[in-house]
Amino acid sequence: MLLWCWTKAIPVKQTMALTQLSEKAVRHWYDQFRNHLPEKYHVLETIVQLDEAYFKDWCLLMGKQIGSRKLTYELIWRQHPGRLESNCFLFDRVQPGAKLWTDGASIYKKSEEYWPVKHTSDIHKKFEFIHTSEMRVPLVI
Figure 1 (cartoon, rainbow, N blue to C red):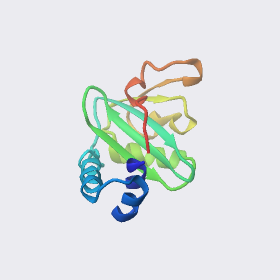
Figure 2: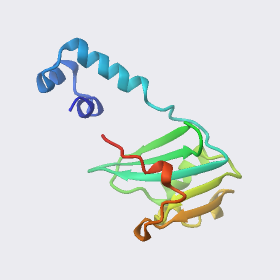
Figure 3: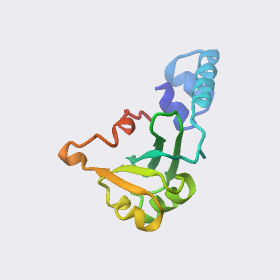
Figure 4: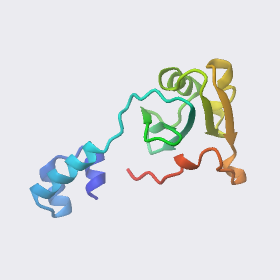
């Protein structure tokens, strides 16, 4: 509940009422959540996994550099990202020449025609998760 309040930008006093925690506890955890946010604008290189997460009225494009803690993300304020958003994400966040690993989403098809990457995809419907395993961490918002 505390994490939900923080992600919805619920003020401290309202969060205290909802969770029945002290002000000190709420402020402590809000600080912890803030301190553990990844840097938003890493430029990912070498081997990069991309995936998306869907919520009620928005979605999240995420990227991770394999074997590192480098993460990057982009919030999209509509239900589904398009090829334009995924390509802009590539242009801004993925170094040319990287290996790009994604799921089989259509927004990533022919990525190598728009940005100089070597693209490989897993088809999750076929239970293929070899190239997207590090992005399969549950995301709780």
